[in-house]
Image (cartoon, rainbow, N blue to C red; front, top):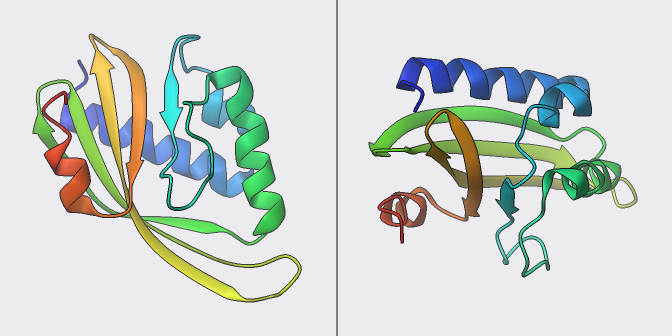
Length: 134
């Protein structure tokens, strides 16, 4: 299990790769069994996405919001093997030009040193409430 500082470094490298649209750097080291759960309020995808599908999902999102930027607001370690990241996503629609601003929280779950799952929530409280392994 990484320390909070090790996770922060790992996560900020992922955000930097996202900003550069460098998908191999962002996704390349995720284990094959890794699961990404999008919030149902934002993405209509009830099943988790695996690393081999995640690149297409992220690229599709960026095609809809080409200037999408993500800012890290907070990173905490609420439980063993879990980190919660509060994010602010901002961008403009590719077709409409309409601005969006969305705050969300990611719950990163680990087994040992390997990330096994990310679950995204529409608010920090829900992410923290789910950090106990439920």
